[in-house]
Length: 72
Length: 152
Image (cartoon, rainbow over all chains, first blue to last red; front, side, top):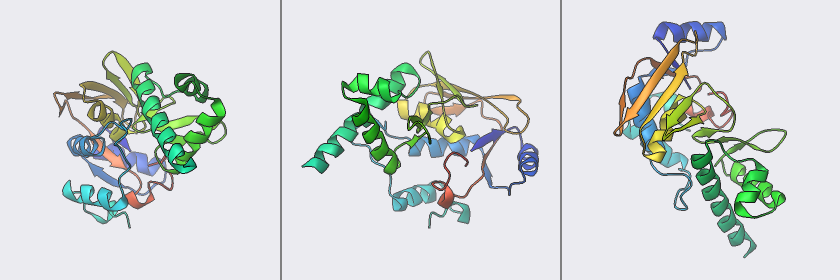
């Protein structure tokens, strides 16, 4: 999960490493995801890992609902 | 009883290794965690193995030391998160943004373009992202993240 200067740099990197292009989005979208995903300090006793269903619901709520984001 | 003791102990280990990381900038080694909790290294290593099995963290393959304690990295990465006078390494751009989210603090993330190495920066202030340029790329679809979390 990397940051690139532009879409062209994503394409060049994928080409250099002979990898299929994954999914791209804006830093703002990534921030919204990080803000929700890491909403609780993981050192706190009450923290627990999300279930797949909970993670899927979060992705859906944030608008990450393409096949790329399907967990099953 | 053994099981509940194990869960309580693992929860305490989790709390203390996150506290240590926030305070020191890097996740603890097994011996540092053992000293932190006044417990034996073997007990700590066993607890870390259980936490890894539960996908709470990822261990280094040969040493069984912590590799990733999301969102933190125990080894240097291209994602340096400056927060509260400390510099933390994050595992990826998502985790880099996860550090200020989890710690509820402003931060500056210093990184570089994954393609060309040009320096890039993201800033989080007052719970909002500022100075946001660039494109985030996730290489693997979500269903495969746990296949190889090091490469996503």
